[in-house]
Length: 311
Image 1 (cartoon, rainbow, N blue to C red):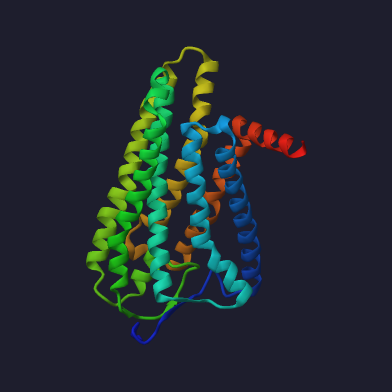
Image 2 (image 1 turned 135 degrees about the horizontal axis):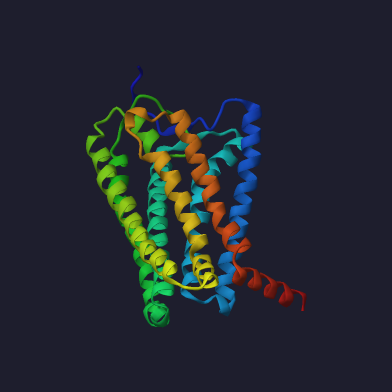
C-alpha cells in the first residue's frame, strides 16, 4: 500500500457518487433540482420572516436561523457534485477540505442545538401558554440562538485542529462526494486514536446526545400536556403546532444515526456516502416544504407579499 506524505501532495481527489457517466448525470440533475428548491425555499422563508411583522414571533425567529443553517449545509455538502460535473475538476485542496469539515461539523452541531431550542419554545407555548411571551421574549430568543451558533463552532475547533495535524495518508483519493470527517480519518495512516476518542465523546455524546436529551424531555412534557387536553380539537391544534418541528427532528436524527453511529469496522464508505447524500439533500429541503406547505401563517405571508407585489 502506497503511503502519501501530504507535504508533497496538496489536494484530495473527490471520487463522487459513481464512476458511471449515466448515473453521474442522473445524480447531478437530481442534486441540482433539490439544491435549487432548498436554496430558493429557505431564502423565501428567511425573507418572509424578516419582512412580515406578523411572523416576528419566537418560532419564526428560530425558523429563520434554521433556514440559514440549511442553506449553508446544502452548499457545503452538495457544491462539489455540481461543480465537478460541470468542470470535470474533482480535486480539492487539503486546507479547503479541512475548512469544509470544520464548517460542516459546526453547522450540524448548530442545527441540533437550534432544534433543541425550538423544542423548548414549543414546550413553553403548549405547557406554559400564559407565560409564553414573558419567557420567550426577544432577548431570550437572541441569547438562545447566539449560544447555539457559538457553541457549534467552538465545539468543532479541536476536531479541526486534530484533522489539520494529520500528515500521512494511504491515498489522496477520497471515496465520497464532499470532505467529511469519516473518510479523511479512514485514509489517514497517522495516529488518530485521540481524534476518534474526541469525536466519540464530544461530537457524539455532547454535540449529539445532549440536544437529543433536551429535545426528548421537552416532548415528554409536550405530549403529556396534549394528552391532558379534554377536547379532541384542542389536542389536534396543540399537536399541529409542533408536528412540523417533530418531523424535522426525527428525520435529521435518524439520518445521522445511520450515517455516523455505527462501529468503525462496519462502516463501508461506498454505502455510507449514500446516507450522507440523503442527509445532505433530503433533510434541508424538509424545512421549506414542511413549513410552507403545512403552515398557514407562512402561506398567508406569501399571499400578502404577492398582493403587495401586484399593487
